[in-house]
Each structure stands twice: as C-alpha cells, then as structure tokens.
Amino acid sequence: MQEQRDHFLKVVKILSSWGVDPSRMARIILMNEGSLDRLSAITQSSVRLTEDQLRRIDLVVNFARIINGMFENPSNVTYFASRPNDNYGFDGRSLLEILEHCDTDDLQRVYRNFYAEMINPW
Image (cartoon, rainbow, N blue to C red; front, side):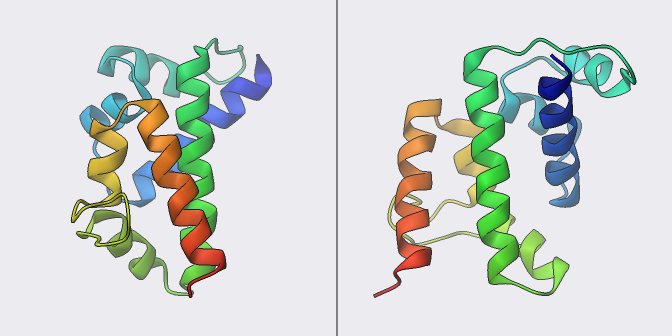
C-alpha cells in the first residue's frame, strides 16, 4: 500500500506541474475532490486505490516519461499536455482532455498509439 501512495503522490506532482487544478485532477484519477485532498495530505499511512485508478496513474506517468523525453524545456512539457493534438487517437483534443474524458481502456489505446508514434515516427 505504501507503493500505491508513492504512485499517487507522483501522479499528483505530474498533473500539478502540467497546471491541472484539483477538480480536474480528481476526474483524471477517478475520485472525488475530497478524497484527492485527503489522500494528498496523508504523510505516512498507506493508500488504497482501485485497479482502474492504478492503471490510470500508470498511464499518466508513462505519458509524462515520453513527453519529458521529447522536450528539454519544462514549459514545453506543460504546453504539450494542454494543447490540441492531431496525432492518431487524440482527434484534435489535448492530452489533458483525453485523460479527463476517456475511459481507462480507451486511454490505454491512445497511449499505445502515442508510444508507437514517438518511438517510430515514420
């Protein structure tokens, strides 16, 4: 459970760095804002997350790894997450819109396509 807490705090840090407010962050992680606040304040106890929440957290972390590898400038990372994207699966939506509105299975598909495009762009 400590590992879940560490993953949770990591995704909160990533989303915060992308300028995501707590309300939107809660929707991305599939929890209510009160739970997000409570879990963010926990310093030493364990956190229990659902399988779906854990999958989404892992996907956000994986998206962040790819994006951080694409850009050296942190402001470009933030800009990328919030700007419209025409890559396959995004359909003109931003990464944040995808994270907020797609179910976890669709989000997984978008991630796979994005990963494939980034490691083999042609």
